[in-house]
Length: 407
Image (tube, rainbow, N blue to C red; front, top):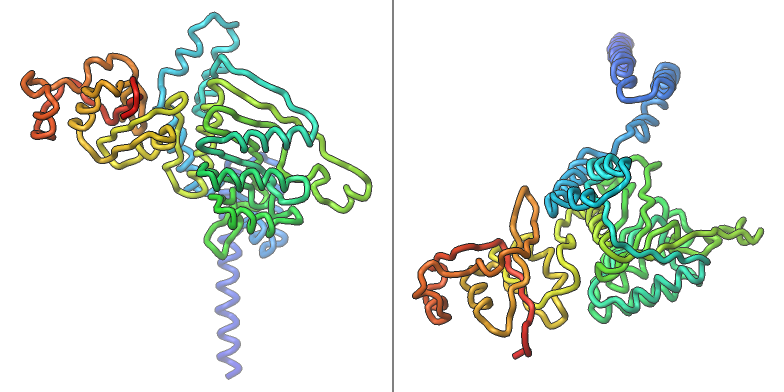
């Protein structure tokens, strides 16, 4: 019996020795790659002198990168944004600008996919009460959508009015999507009450960078998403340093000493709102895998969309339909041709699929949906033959507005 125990101990000792050597050699090879020399040396010292603890800590916070799946989703959304309007960069740099701006624009486009756009308006808002009031008023005026992304979201006496406005928006049919940083919001005293409020109001909310290993969702707990933005109807955007929480952050020490955070909020209008609106679905897609959050392709709203496929394009576009508009998905060119012949409707744009994304086109609309055979250019023939008719030019989807009185 003693021999068996001794033999087992020898085997286990040999295994541990091999593992220890493999760990140290592996650390020597991998740790210096992609790290500053000081950081690599610190990790190597930890592994060599406290191997068990050092390995655990490294597995928790050692990697400077987000999980590969998140990086792939980010790349997908960046490619999609570039494909929406690949000529935007040229348009931005056509006007006479100082020489230094061109490389800045290219760098911005290359790193984040977003173009730099002119023609914007800015309104600076200061003072915690005024900032929360501006956000609340914007939510109250929302007609179609409210997209909120923030580092800290907390229900307290100061933010109750804002939460009530969001709840009322949901009740009147506004699409409300909320992203809140997991660790940032979890550390606030009212985290559980905040989540319960969002859930009971029927708000579509998700955590950013969640640290939930038991649910299979884990990344470095010291990484957070500090984006703070709210976009209303794709027309107004608010950005700044403001978190949705009392200015004291509900910390006892701050309350006792009378300390409050001072933040700044900026309301933006114009083309830049489209860039902020497009940044939101990037994080939304990373957290949910939902690719249907709309990418802005039109100013305002339209009355009728006819799409040939019940796919992502109409999921994007349907959010821009007017309140009394209609959407026909998974249909045919014939339906669009009938709409084009209707004197009440006017074709205002076509949507094309290019390079994995969708691009809006408003040029040459008169050349679309014309039957190649003149005898097929009447509504009865189109209804009878349906998909059997060939047309001069076709698109992936067709956007119409009412040109006259509604029937």
